[in-house]
Length: 118
Image 1 (cartoon, rainbow, N blue to C red):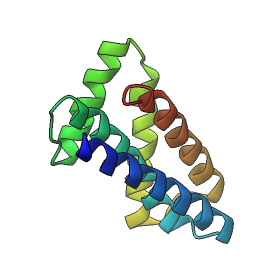
Image 2 (tube, one colour):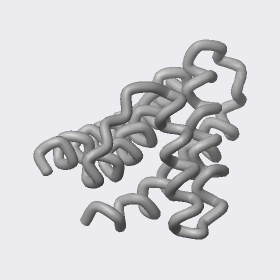
Image 3 (cartoon, helix red, strand yellow):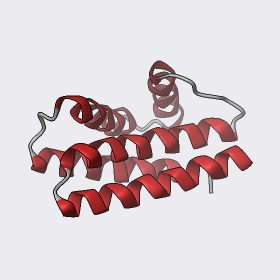
Image 4 (spheres, helix red, strand yellow):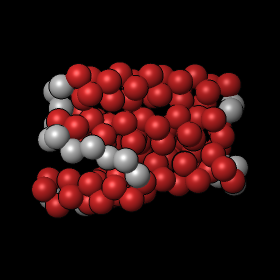
């Protein structure tokens, strides 16, 4: 359970940092913090099940598993928005409005998955 708590703490930290960066207009850094928040909540759910996620591919496969288990097709859409933000960190091509929309998707993903670990 310690690992789960570590991932949840990082999730909270990254969400707060993303919000602060959005307020400053630093959309590139906010993008990466939102991605980190999404990755950490997925890792928390996996860790609770005794699964260690060590790659991007494993994150995507696990979110697909959760989508099937929960019968929630939105999970893959919400996580895809997080992946878009991760790419934006390197490319800086998303308009601010899209960073906000994708950030909102990450926050929704966190709400849905946090229920599984609390």
